[in-house]
Structures are given as C-alpha cells and as structure tokens.
Length: 412
Image 1 (cartoon, rainbow, N blue to C red):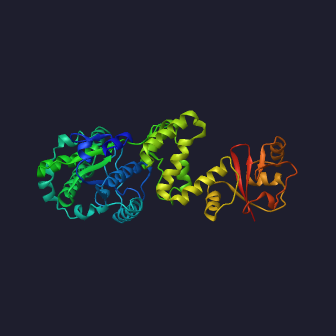
Image 2: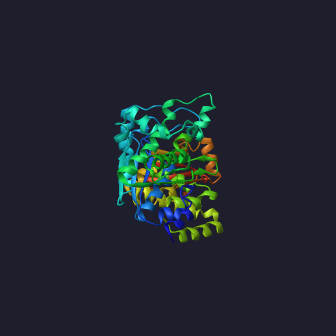
Image 3: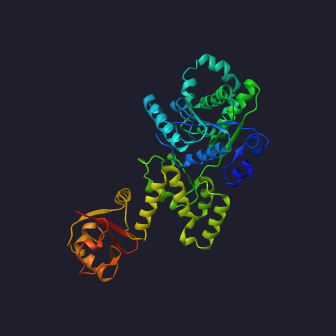
C-alpha cells in the first residue's frame, strides 16, 4: 500500500494543496515541517494526531522538521472568540524547552530536527519585514481568514499584533524553504489559512511551489468538543499533568462511534488488525475490545510498556477484578487513583464501611451487609466479618459496595 493510500485510509488527510496527495508524498523524499506554539508546557491528545502523521511520514523516509514557536508564541494565533493572553518571555522560553523535550522523547529514533522560530523572528527589523514580506499580503486576503473575519465582527475586535500573525507563520515557511529545503507543511485544519499564507508567500517571493497538508480536528462525538486545552478537556501527554492511569482511562472510555477512527489515527496497529478488532467489537460491543486495544496501545506509545501494563492491571482491579501480586509501581498507581483508607487488623467491617465513606452510618452499613452488597478481598462480607491478614494482598485489599463503589484499604 502506498503512503498516500495508508494516510487516507487512516483518516489523517483533511485538505491538501497541489495536484494529489500521492504526487506530494509518494515520490521524492521531502523535508516536511510542523509547528507548535508554546502556549502550554505540554502537548495534549489533540496534538497527537499530527505527531502520529509525522511519524508515518518519517517512517517512509521523509525528513521532519519540528518547529517550536518561541517567536510566534510571544503573540499567539488569533482565536475566533477572544484575544490571547500575551505570555511573559521567560514563560514562553520555559514552555519551548518542555515541549521540545517531550517531542524528542516521542520521536526517538526518527530523522527529525528541532528548530525555534525565535531564532529568525527575533532578528527581524520592522521596516525590512514590511517592505520584503508585508507587500506580498493584501488586507483583503487576511480579513477572509475565519478567525480574523469572526473577530472583526465581534465586540472583542482584533489587535494589529494578532492580525500580523499569518505573516509571521508564512515567513516561517519561507525561511525553512530557503534554509532547509522544506516543501511541505502539515497542521490541523484550523491552521489551513495560516499554512496557505506560507505557500503563497513562497510562490510570490521566490516563484517556487510548496505544499500544505492538514489533518481533521479530532472531535469527541459524544460532546461535539474538539480535543484541546481551549475546550477545557485537555488530556496532557505530560504524566505530571495527566497521570498514565488517567491517560489510559481517557482512551478506555472513548465512545463506540469514535473508537475505530482513533485506532487508525493514534496507533500503529496494521489496518488489517484494526478491521478484525472492529468486527469483534461490532459482535460484542459490551466487551469493549476496541477501547481496550486503543487504551493499551496509546498509553504504551506515550508512557511506555511498563506504565501501560500497570494502568491495565489497576483498571482491571478497580473495575471487576481482584488484587493479585502487584509491583511497587502498580501499588502506587492503585492508591493514587482510588479512594484509600488506612485500617488496622481486627477492625469490624461495619466500622470500616463508615470510615471508608462507603456508608454514612453504622445503621446504613448493616443494611448493605444484610443485603449482600459488600465484598472484601473478593469475598462477600457479613456482619461478622473482621479484618484479617488473609483478606489482604501486599497489605492492600479492595472493599466494594455494589458494582461501582469501592475503596482501597491499606494496613497501618
């Protein structure tokens, strides 16, 4: 299967400039760039679709340039509804470093070069820029761009600082074309206008043809919101911001109508294997085989096999299984992601239910026990149950009330 066909089947392609995707990516080896502004100190799940696309392109032999926008990040791409907060230069610089380190880990082993556009944007002289670059843009073209057009008709208005952003991104493309031989820029579909501004600048300035490729925005079909920090639903790649277990749970809870699309874009599982998973999922959706495959594969990709296995094991324990032998890391994951209560041996079960918050009073606790709704260490608890070492594994036990309410008990 050709690279162009693979990318289209996986759902990576939304728009392209040029004759066809095959002519752009299946012929000569090219230098391709993608830019990310350091508006946060971590990438999120919404960024991952582009990072996955870059890895597919790198695997096919294309050279990748990853641009972290230390210059454009000082301004920020115009948002359609509000003006971006201008960050302090020191904060931007810190974000640049963190994003670069994060991307380097994700792209370990690939032919990729990292650049910061502050290197050239920081050296620009205003008069020279207006004469050499600004003259290739018309206000008529700029005000047609979606975010700019929306802001011009809103009460928020649009500052000249934000209005000039497409010129800076276009200049990035020209700079990378002239210095690195870059002929393709990839970005999200919401960046189409900015990317095309670079394509047009290169054509007008040096009479050369370069190309644009955009990916579709990833939308949570159950809510209609895109994956992104501006939507308030960001799932970060930084384990300090979103733990590997929380990351795993996010993918495990993807809706049925999105999961196969996500398997194609966010994993390197062969398409034939994904088709088989889709068939199994359709036959028995309650088993959630597709979500489980997705969660394990993406968590492995971002956080490593050990973290993925720990997240899987803890998830199984918390949602139906019982504790088996746990590594220290798995114990930490379990205790960090479930309600936990420290208890002493020989404590009666009624008191433990109240201490753990699974019952609001001893009377309620007795009611739950009489109804057979409580289990401890995998065994049904009764009014006579007391805590013994036999109920614990590695000094940990799961106390459950019903199917969904639970608490991790740890021995003092």
